[in-house]
Image 1 (cartoon, rainbow, N blue to C red):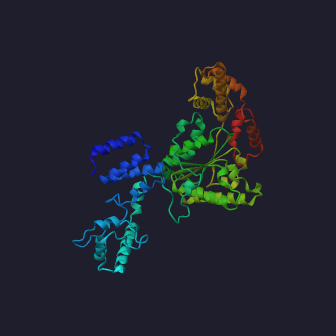
Image 2 (tube, rainbow, N blue to C red):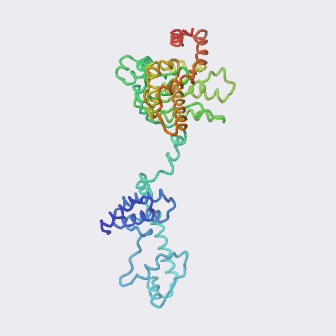
Image 3 (cartoon, rainbow, N blue to C red):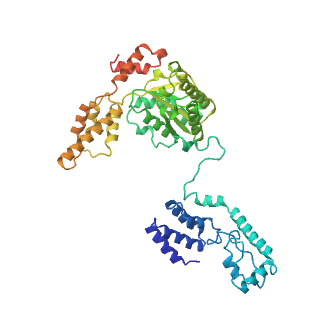
Length: 467
């Protein structure tokens, strides 16, 4: 057994030079000799991470715990009175590679006759050699590879994921459907108090209070459709909702689901919902749902129609049979979404997400300036100057101001802080991008508000004197 001070010295050296592969191998060998196999396995795993083909590390890992320096099993005990020193020397020679025993002298010949059971009986020697080879093969076959995998699981990444024979094995890793914890709550959403109230009443309060939900017969069937102009925080709100519920979050866009090959889009949609069910409680957020769930009357492409039908099927499964899977979707053009998606039991609740109000605009400015060198910023004034701007527009203003300060610093030869003047100049350059959307929304509100589906949009347009 190795003295502990020597092992401590080797550990210190490895900590100082973690990428020194020969040093780690030497420490692992000493640890195996000292019977400290668990620590040795960790160091061997670190060696294989740096040098995956290292033969010595693999040999030490596959060696039995009782004898790290030998791979094969121990030799059989010789008969009483027989010296087996020569046998130990020649025991490493495989009979298959050297079928004729090598005899160095009369003494060796006598040992060979004794081991074979009689002088001149070469068949007995061959049988003994084959028996030893068979024993070594059985020892190798009986090695517990599952134990080695368990020992290395925390050291080396798995080569393969999922269970063999499972149709859905590895979907989480093979697809881009990553179920994550967002770390956000509605408290992180600046302003938008009316949106938060609607979310609380229609979605969050029933989910957080299951006993009251049962008492009042409140159903959780269906999902919530967020709609409004682009760049106003629909995705951020969806992530905050997932954080409020303590659920995992999966966001999927049109590009991740639709495939040019027939049948692939339907399979992708099915896999998405299977991942969500395995990760429940989970919020599935379908971005650009107007592209995925476009009106089938407008679709001439048969594969796209099949994809919409598959989405409707999965939504019905979630609404009736699956618990812990909550549906959110976002669209800039709700009037292009198939009416079948918006019937009760599917996306039957809608929430208008409007451009940020005054407090929200201040919060957006603060968020995008938090990691930049700024001084003397009047957020209230910037908020008044950017009335009608989207969150994306404000982010672009901050980027433009930073570019101007950077160019000015290059010309001066020294860095300077971003000031109020830079941001106000950027506001003059960046125009609000929502005009086109509001023109379309105005026509819908005036001529296509069937059943009062867009009453909240009509109220906002009237408040802004756009209709």
